[in-house]
Amino acid sequence: MFGRWFQPSCPVDRAAKVWLEERLEWLSREFGESAFTGGPIVLPTKEFFPDSYDGSEDAAHALAERVCGYMDVSPSLIDLRFQSTPRKLWLVNDSGKYLPHAAGTYEEGNDAFVIHLDRDGLHDTMGLVGTVAHELAHVRLLGEGRLEWSAFDNELLTDLTVVFLGLGIFLANTPRVWESQFTTWPDSDLVKPEYMTPPMFGHALAHLAWFRGEQKPAWSRYLNGGARANLKQGLRYLWNTSDSAFYPPDGASQQ
Image (cartoon, rainbow, N blue to C red; front, top):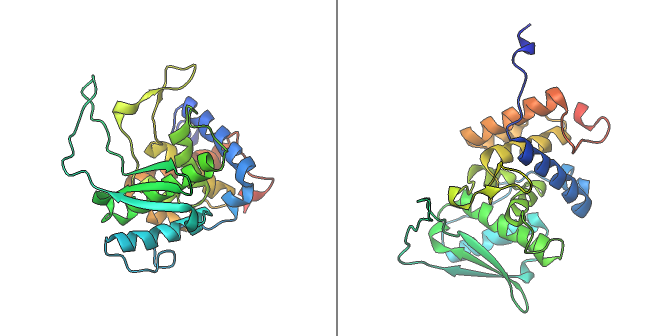
């Protein structure tokens, strides 16, 4: 009786929902659906990161090589550099909202893809894996000529690529959401973030579980409380409504 009054809701607004589902479909064409459904879901465990980690640059290099393997990027193509900002100033925009500091940056060198990492982030392993994965996703998109720098959703799609390739848990646990970077979606007055928000990660990860036939994915325990709540909302929505433009092959979501 009460089900009619408490229908599951999508964790994201209509514009973000359309974008996510269309871009998941695009990623499946670019990388193959098997990258989404057949690859491992990388977890913050010894199984995936067996090397000891002490926050040093050498340890960060070893960790980055592991992430390269999961992102299908040859470490020989990456020039990993470290930088420090001794006196970071918390600047604000005209609206008084704080401007972000970059945990990592990507650029294309003559012989390699250059990734800069902020030394201040080396002791946050969850955040560091997410940062490295994000920058390597730039390699897969920009470096491999799949996407133009000028794309309106460059950073958003880079985050989503990390989810698609199996490392979404790390970004979902350490999202980069800065109100100072909010704009609006094309042809809409709805807010568009520069990077994916926690609800957007929830909807994307829910698709990952849905495609794999997982109503209660075991890997959800590695998400922090907020990220797990967004995933659960997304799962309830997809399993109850099947309302998505990015739909599993026949029978895949019925396992």
